[in-house]
Length: 314
Image (cartoon, rainbow, N blue to C red; front, side):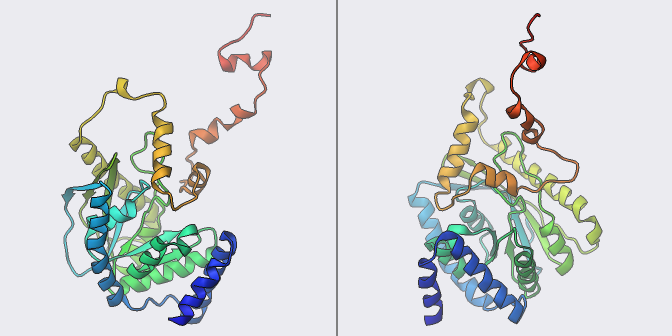
């Protein structure tokens, strides 16, 4: 206990970059010494059950409401990887409340959470941390995930990796890690779609997906199928809530949406560039921002005036 407190107070004396490096080195030191062993699973499950009523109260008094549109999962003794959409704000909390059973969160690039109350509560619940740009840290985190699932625990992974800030995509491309782990250790995946409209949140929980007869070589194809299933779940939510007319959408709607997403996550220092650089990019797929990036470097002149629809007569 005193060692943990001493480590925490030491972190408080560091700047953000030094803190991240210190925590990463401590994780890797533990991994090199013990491997990916996960301990005290029953204890963390007990803490999870204690925290859930407190989480419900917090959401209630903050004016947030969660609606479960469907819950089609089958409860059995197999370990489960829950894969919700990443909408920002309180999507971690809403995922826990929707699932309503103990599971460890997989969290990449925790940043400020290392030294916050939210981070402390996640540690008590059960969390697997990693800095995604460091390969050995990713390997260590995966070893922990496999060990947890093989011991009968459950995981909560946001397969999009970062918040979905697209103006039109229901679900971002998914990282294949969740499917890889499910194949390797015989876990089911339960897809979950989350949506938000103001303070109203909606969750749609799909059926268990079993990967027992699947080959690791097909992980990208299977991940695309998982994405399709999650998109279908999200579309079911959209059909269940009141729609709006195109004429009621303001020209500033996307800017307002971005502002809302980032204002909900006040504990983080993520930016739009951070999110775009952290997205999974399938081979052969290019974002429109990248395609038209050259436009920002063009110096208007007669030779390229046609690009602006203003070609002048000579």
